[in-house]
Each structure stands twice: as C-alpha cells, then as structure tokens.
Image (cartoon, rainbow, N blue to C red):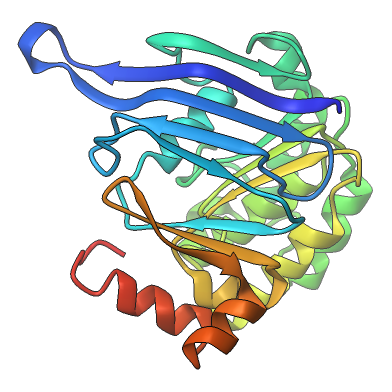
Length: 265
C-alpha cells in the first residue's frame, strides 16, 4: 500500500542537558492514500504518554482526541517540515521533509501566518505564486460562499473569519497530504458544519488528510471510529455507533466524561 505519510521512531525534544523536555519520542505512523486513515501509531514521551503506546486503526474516518498539550501540533509541524526531529525519520510520499514534500503538502496552522496588512487578493496571489497546485477559481468560489471579498483586509477580520480564509486557501490546493491543525477550534458553531463539509468535499481521494481536534462533538457526525487517549493509555475506543449503543450516550458526552478531570480540553 502506498504511504502518504510515514514516521519511524520520531522524536522531538526541547531544552538542553538536564532541562530537556520530550514533546514526542518514538512515534511510528503509517498513513496510506485515502480519508484520514491511520494504520498504526506508536507514542512515547509526551507528558501524556509516559509509557509506550501503540494504536491501530482499521476504518476510514478516525478521530484521535485528547486534552490540549498532547503533542498534536508538534507532530503536525514535524510532518509539514516546520520542525526538525531530534531522532527518528519521517517521510512524505517516501521523501524526507524538504522543498519537494512541502510542494505536495497543504498545511493549515493553528495560528494565522500571513501579514495582517494584506488584502484577500494579495493572499491568493501569494498562494498562486508559491504553490503550483493552487486553484484560484476554487478559492474564489469558497470565499464567495463565506461572503469574503477579494478587497477585504485581513487586519479587519475576526479570528473566525481569518480561520475560514486560511481553510479556503489550504483546501484550494490539490495536495497529496493535508495537515489541518485544529481547523474548527476558533470559529463559531454555525460555521463549523460548513468548514467540515468544505474539508470533506475539497481534497482528492488519492490524498491523505490528518486532522487534529479536541472538539469531538462537532465532528462526530462524520466519524466512523473514535479513540480517546488519557495519560498515555487508550481510555475508550470503537466505532461511534458501538460506543453510543454500549454507553447510552453520544460520543461527545463520553469525551466530556472521560476527560472531566483534565481541565485542558
């Protein structure tokens, strides 16, 4: 099976000598082409993962959810080539992160990255110049649906509108790998359904999509399976239908119950 994203023994540590803080340690991931399908994930060394944990996934749409600070953003930045690993290897379509992999990876950061002095048309021109797979036509259509015009200034946009803009720009690329870091974290509930449908509709079936989130209630309706992580161990896992039937409540309610003492979600 062709792998879009593969990690082996991946580690990322911060600090020096006695002050070294592991953010990732010993992560193995295999993601083939297709919708958010993680074949295997081995984690050790997160503050939430003191013990080695191996997770396997067998279905199409799987959400990995847990409290903030679990290392989701670090992992996505490593895959995007924005951070260098302290140990281990990572490959996108068989290649180490670099100019070639960045050209085939569409990355949505958890914080705005473009200068606030730009107008929307300037942002689109930048994406067109930097990414050969960027479609101005697709971006324009999505932004029109959101009532975002080409002359609108980024500096005048709310945090939620900015996130919608970045999502439209990201999903207007025909990438092999989409890395979306908390794509619905800063938008109002009314916009989340649109954002999720935009994500699902606008990537190729031969691509892989990696989505980090702690808002399981807003994505439950598009999930096949859910896996909850707590203190480095699997607290709960299964198909969303089975979890609902076995526990007599929604997966979102289960999430709140499992993590009610963490205070970080």
